[in-house]
Each structure stands twice: as C-alpha cells, then as structure tokens.
Length: 435
Image (tube, rainbow, N blue to C red):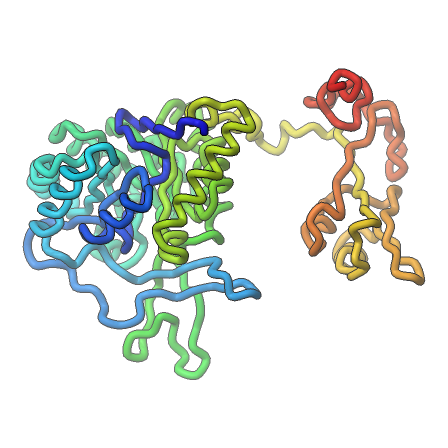
C-alpha cells in the first residue's frame, strides 16, 4: 500500500485525514476514539479565554438538508465554541498528546481582538504539547456577533494583526481558518500570509438558514419559538470549498502558502480532489458526525489504492497536480468541439435527457416512436446537461470530434490544437502508440 504519511507545515501524522474543529473534537473521550479509529490528527474544538465558559443552547442545534433517499447533504449548526472550562480542555489535550505522540493535535483558538488575550492563552496551549494552533477566523454565528469568528475573517487587517501577535508569541505553527462568507477569499489569505501564517485552512461554515417550520413560522432548528442563522457544512458545500482552495493555490500573491482543505469531505475521492487543487491535507467533520469515526478507514484504504494505481509513493506527489489546469474562462480552448453520445445498450428509455434538452436546452435529442433516443449532432453544443440528468452512469458521454472533421452545427472545421489531443482516446495515433 502507498505510504500516506503526511507532513504538513512540519507537523507529522500517519495520514492526511484530520478531524476539523467541531463537536466531534470537544473532549478527550471523543478524540481518543477518533485516534483509535485511525484519524491522523484532530483540531480540538475551539477554545476561548479563561473565565466564565460560553453558554450553548439546551435544545436543537442542527438543521439539515436531505437528498431524496434521506442521505444527509448539508448540516446547519448553531453551536458555539466549547462550553467546557479552558483548564479542563487543556488538561485533556495534554493527556491525549502524551498517549498519542504520533498523531497531530492542533488547538483551535478564538479570543477577543486584544493582544493581551492572545498572549495569555498561547503559553497555556504550548504547555499541552500541541503541535500547532488554528485561529478560528470563520465561525459565522454567535461569536461573530461578539466581534470574533467571521467578524475577524471578513476584515483582512484584523487577520494580519492577530496572526502577527500569535507568531511573535508562540513557537507553534499558526494556521488561519478562513471564512467563506466573503466576496474574495484571496484577500484574507493574503493578509494571513503577511502576518506570517504558516498555513491557512478553509472553508469554515457558510452562513445559512436551512429551513422554516411552516406551522410555527420559525427557522429550524427552533429554540422556544425562535431560530437563528447558523453555519452550513457537509457534502453540499464541497464545490464552494474546492473553488476557494483553488483560488488561493493558483494566486501569485499566496503562492506556496500551505492549505488545509475543509468542506464536505466524505470519501477518499473528495480528499484527493482537495489535495489535487492544492491542499496539503484535509479536515473532516460532517462525515464523521453522519457515519462515525470509522469512516476514516474507507478514506485511508481508498486513497492508498488510488495512489497505488497512479504510481504515487507519497501524498506530496498528488498535492496541487490539478492547479495548472485551473484556468480563467477566457483561456479555455474554443476550438475544442464535442458531441453527446448515447449508449443504446445502457439506455433505459426514461426520457429524462429528452425532456431536459427539449424543454430547457438546445433541442438536440430526438425521440422515436419506440422511445429510442438519439443525439442530433447538428444541434448539440455539448452542454453536458443530458449527462447530468441521466440516471444511468456512463450511458451518455461527451465525445470530442477528431481534428479535420466538420462540425455539422456550425460548419466549422475542427482544428488540431487540443491541449491533450496527443493522448486523446479519439486520436488513432494515440491508440496505436498505446498498443
């Protein structure tokens, strides 16, 4: 099996799968179970300053979005940072790190934007033996109303200031966790880099209301007849997270800044996609809350098998391999032309491709009296909608036209300047070379 050993900003762990700062990492009992299940590291649920602990609601804390099969797609939470005393968390962190020295243990921290508050808590965290700290600059609810969390993450000047305070005070590597509730995520990432951050992690949760009770007319989850906005996470946020990770990875201003990828990681494939777009490791929350800690075992075996198939010997070989292929729209090859092709052996004649294309797209699919569906090449623009609505995987493909042929829709001769034409399966020369 491939070696999944990870070294992220000098922090070693047996694999790149960490648990994100969240309810699953709120206490020693949970973290020990996580490490026994195989997680490479944890980011301990966010610590606050010493004094009266934060008070969380004693009622529903989660709202949800489900798919048709009731599979959890998105989770909204209104839970705040840890409501356990700081000294208890610190004592438990020290005990866990003592017993699991090979696992990464990161302390998430959120205190007011006062230099003395940060200088007071950092030495206490250092004494636990923690491998690093993560500055929570992303929590969108509760704490943000108090001038912390996303209120900091939306202000690059505050990010740079707090990061610099921490780098001047602690020996531990500093990770800055970024909020997605911002127009351009590159700006806070640049601020973190200016402040001396060793890495950034993203995304934190997205500000959201998942549903409304139409009898009580209150947002859910509902506390005594009232509801509040919360933080949205889970598989549904993955596309947003992937884009933001890629934006930072390919920006000249943040080039080389290590990234810990967060947002809907549920399978090994999700993790591999984040890493291919520039993440050095990934953090997981909702998948563990949905399926339990042992879900990491499938992630480990799946990523290892994938790396074996690709001939990768370390996770570093995967990191950022897709970044050069992330392009602005104006740089896409407009000479590339493809057409949809329906595999009649797989088609179940449901007609979803026809309905979607006929009603909402380009009228490029024909239906015969016996419900045989075929593509009209002279109308098809290869928009891919039919592929996405088809319930049978692999039934419809987009097939590139060979250079030198004429597009029946436009009369344009396909030019031989495809970036990957030398290895394209439609290229007969490529097929001969493969043989």
